[in-house]
Image (cartoon, rainbow over all chains, first blue to last red; front, side, top):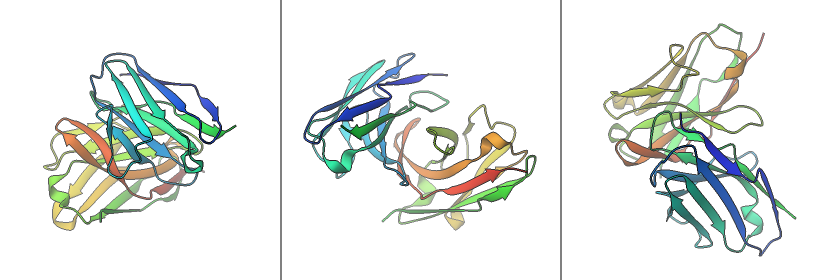
Length: 107
Length: 121
């Protein structure tokens, strides 16, 4: 099983600041990496797939990068609606696995 | 617009069974692989099972293999999860989700609102 490790567990950021979230895979997943956002009480929402492709309608302030085992989700200028938990997920192999999540909270 | 509506959740005793359903609309259900993903209270996301458009192959997480069965009825635009021998650790919100991408490398695109399964005596 591919283990996905996200860091940090919690990220405290002020609105307007840049947020950088990391995701590491225990073995290469190529570019088969997705990011999801989940706000409290809401359904997960696909943000990024293919490690760097934004989902339809996603603001350009969100960007994904990386390949192999190291991935990054960057929010260039955090907006109030971006405070949420973010999960990475590999879809290169079975079983599909998620990271434990990074909570982005207001500083 | 894609709509996924889960149903069938509820309170069940350990060892009991439950059948979840996911009614799909707004897309050509029969051509999409589908998935179940769960989230225990206050915890992260856990993939449970996936089924291709033709119902083969099918994949399960080790934690549910042998106890859960995923199936679909393309004529009814519906996805199912039969859950047997339920345990307390199966307590979670269960989401159905569509697949997107190129076979076999699918990610989870659209998600339903989820249905809560509580396993407790």
